[in-house]
Image (cartoon, rainbow over all chains, first blue to last red; front, side, top):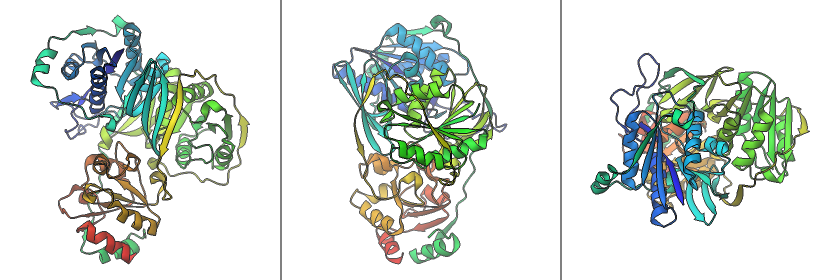
Length: 249
Length: 309
């Protein structure tokens, strides 16, 4: 079974984000970039499916600037077999990304498409579900367990009240949540090997996809700061303050 | 034109987040219709009809929507939503599951987790785990939006008298099915609706020690949450997690016990009205957002607090 994994290049999750002085966007100049953590979990899940003999080939795809090749190489070093970059400098919104991925799905015919549930930059949590609607595939979003069984996959999802398991007909889409797995680190020999794995570069036009933007970023501001209050010396003082000053008890 | 709000419910009851979503719809302005799709969900529809500001409730009662799976819900809302200027759902794991499907079927982009309405086409939403707030203007013909409950005060649950009309189901493609569910059973208030929340972190050391928090919570009618560290360590189940990747809460009182205050946790609770932090490390970042900080060993402070309330 062929597995397609979509990955995104985003700000490294350890970097503290700063808003530009003119409030036009966040400042990404000279900031360390990395693979979106939820996408790393998606790659890891695909690799585990291959190690179990369920997946036969793992294709990793990214959409973005030329440098996004770095994140595809990372996925190849983790165990993906080949990569596809849909290269564009255009501003990308979820619907365009989903349409580009749909074109890749039609070309590659995977049985399973695994994506991160959201990227840690825009926090949209949309692309996997949109791809599902466009391709007519079912989805297991926010997955904490994936069990392929013949022509079906059971996905356990993290929902507000606990866990829910859904059964999906393949081909299907899975979006990963944090507790699906713990991604491995790439070993040096695998990083070297990844450099020789095939990586195709396409343009949206090659796939017959138009990148369209319908949203304007009006401004970006830092969140309202909460200032530190006071330290209380004892439990008695705390109870007193909560009752008489804050009046919340 | 008008606004379609998709109700969050479990067939028997209307969930509170629906009232916050209606509040966001009111801020946009226009007639508000509420869709209640489920199976045996008349009671939820009756409740929706009583909510403040609702013009009409559309009830679609069909086996296909019994568990509100993303595929049939996405199709139904796209079909019913065509005639509206805005489609809104709560940013819960249900709304986040089906609404992007709806947007794609309508060939429009979506705006996730808004916390403020600037105008009918411009909305504010947190990005980068709440480290920045983006104001986004949409040029799409239909604005498809999820609403973060903590950004909007709920409308009144009673007092309205909207009409209820039946809507028809859309043919289910049968590509997904419900297998099972493990829901946390608790008599304590739900985190997203609780007035007071007590949360434990890695400092709790193990799951058994959470008993202390449960006991205290039951005494004051609080919900109990946890940090991601406590969940990842296996102390408590994931549905208790408060934070960017867990639940976003804004109670009147939030008590953080043995929680250091990682950015990802703060993103989930920093809109709480009053924050109390109890931690033995006085350098813990949680104290930078706490209104009242107590530097103390939680294993002494919590029993003492329990005895004095």
